[in-house]
Image (cartoon, rainbow, N blue to C red; front, side, top):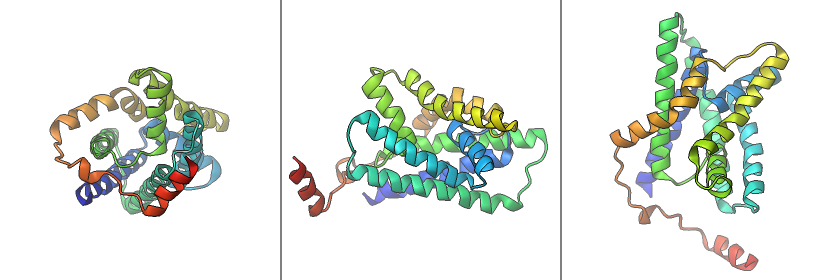
Length: 225
């Protein structure tokens, strides 16, 4: 369990860093982050808080699509979502003094950010302890509604924030966060994750990583049965 938690923490730090780097490069971010940037500018809140707000609505939508509350797993997914949002704000605060100027430098920073996200997701999916509500949405669509079709599930799940970000940007006549980096992330993220899957080898004891719920959780589950 401790080894799995180490890799989980590392992945969320790396994921947040990659997203913050794409925001700093201002050359387009992943669809969910791009939507968060537009909400951030429209509502006057931080990008991390915008992602948390979207995460809460997505968590509710996940349970609605699942037709049931996901129990204690929803609590851990919510905590993971909070950590991710606050860490993005943390990295953006650290990067305040850094100026990313010049087209080539911005492109390198943007692609590096996308690669960091892909690496983090590869680790995160291998550990498989919690799911961000955004990723849970993809899983539910794929398994429950689209008969395992991951391509259609990805397009629908990422099309939601992309549409939201475009709508807010066009309404305000100030479209931000959606650019080349968004296209790279949308089209190539799966291939990047597969690359890191081959490069990164985690030897995790799956049985040792099963959550051992407290006795009161088991009592609640049995009482509902």
